Length: 503
Ligand SMILES: Cc1cc2nc3c(=O)[nH]c(=O)nc-3n(C[C@H](O)[C@H](O)[C@H](O)COP(=O)(O)OP(=O)(O)OC[C@H]3O[C@@H](n4cnc5c(N)ncnc54)[C@H](O)[C@@H]3O)c2cc1C
Ligand SMILES: *[C@@H]1O[C@H](CO)[C@@H](O)[C@H](O)[C@H]1NC(C)=O
Ligand SMILES: *[C@@H]1O[C@H](CO)[C@@H](O)[C@H](O)[C@H]1NC(C)=O
Ligand SMILES: *[C@@H]1O[C@H](CO)[C@@H](O)[C@H](O)[C@H]1NC(C)=O
Ligand SMILES: *[C@@H]1O[C@H](CO)[C@@H](O)[C@H](O)[C@H]1NC(C)=O
Ligand SMILES: *[C@@H]1O[C@H](CO)[C@@H](O)[C@H](O)[C@H]1NC(C)=O
Ligand SMILES: *[C@@H]1O[C@H](CO)[C@@H](O)[C@H](O)[C@H]1NC(C)=O
Image (cartoon, rainbow, N blue to C red; front, top):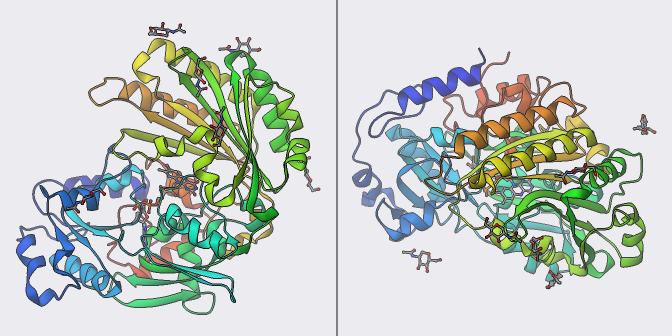
């Protein structure tokens, strides 16, 4: 039995009833509101606290998915680092579990192990400062991608991001940060230069290649485990091609599934045919207007149109039934590509259960058989037609060039990330069948992924995976040692938590 499984069981046992504490703490009732509201707390602003029933509490804690979410008895909307230190210390002293939140887009089910905790809401840590001379950007711990794209672009720079506008930039970074520009610039975590971290003991640390470098290694791949990052500094890149990308939205019909997946696989797996400037996102979904399963894709290229069309010729030769070829500015890359789906995808409060696998190679046979299974599922379960799968084919060049030993992120060889996104209406009974489908399709892809076992990017993890499948057996001993040093009592316990000993 893995440590991970044991942890969940213990957590569930402790999670019953009123204010109970994280693993290892004795439980007992506490008047949390009174304790947090004491004038001696010295919060930066009197409006910092909110409690269930208040609109400000809803605003501070509302999440992207309501599938297995954490629950809170209080929220502290911090205004600065001093507030973070106070919030961590009071939670620790009161023995009440807590979660620091950025964009609130984390969806791993381990977050749901937090019951009646304290939310440390970082959303007001929103500063964006650009140093043009040094080509760096420093952001507050609550900045979302959409908060920084305009000022950064206006200053003449761009940076690798995720593919949606809404997640927290630091939250994405500390898992790895995968996205369209990784072929040129590496992972978002590869662009991280330094961070300010409030540790479990309430210490404020500067973390970089030259200061607490071990922790700097760990926060780039397992960063939800060690502390609260109040600010982060990144290397930024000069704008290329005047900041103009070539984007093509395409629709392929169900009848084209075999030719689409064969072409995608040959481009993605081939040597040098999937250039560093190209990114392809493939979604399989049910179109409720046409009542057909469709392949809806966005292919984006960091360069001019002629070059893009040359590179994308093989996929265009499959003859999409709909094509929208546009020039998109880097700052609008997330919002104006993919049929403008970003606005819908970013809507909070959906029921969303996600399964994932990292692929070293894309098996077209697997993609084709999964496609057929989805078609069958949609026919059998009309309420399950909100379930989709995505294949995010991001270029690997720069990610692979950076040595594996650089950071804790273990899956640099990945060429495509599978996401199985299960979503249904509240009250529907399709949830169990959907989750069973998710497990089955993940298993299918894992079997032909080119990795020896199921392999999962931590920020895409469902929460049922083994530690090794998320962090890798190679990285776990060093990560466990770091956990023991910086968070021995496991206060940062709710996002695929690391053990303090491994093996
Ligand atoms: C619509 C959508 C699109 C996505 N697209 C991408 C993508 O393109 N690329 C990619 O790599 N990932 C992507 N993800 C996954 C994303 O990386 C994770 O969901 C990530 O955890 C989101 O961070 P957050 O701050 O929004 O979430 P939260 O739920 O606020 O936080 C998630 C975890 O990170 C921790 N955390 C957040 N901020 C801080 C901080 N400042 N200091 C310390 N810990 C912190 C939290 O404690 C928690 O454990 C996407 C997710 C969604 C829902
Ligand atoms: C909650 O958020 C909404 C939408 O952003 C805003 O209009 C409202 O003023 C907020 N309310 C409180 C109490 O913070
Ligand atoms: C997928 O493509 C194959 C080969 O063209 C075809 O036989 C099959 O019917 C397609 N699937 C669907 C659901 O259209
Ligand atoms: C790709 O090229 C590398 C190095 O040139 C080689 O080791 C590898 O086997 C090639 N892979 C394929 C699928 O051709
Ligand atoms: C799609 O299905 C809906 C409901 O089942 C039906 O009302 C509609 O006419 C169908 N549309 C087409 C184009 O067949
Ligand atoms: C869904 O089908 C309708 C009718 O064929 C079409 O107009 C629409 O563009 C499709 N939607 C998407 C997202 O492909
Ligand atoms: C094509 O994409 C652009 C940019 O997102 C959008 O403004 C336009 O409406 C789209 N055109 C069609 C026909 O969908």
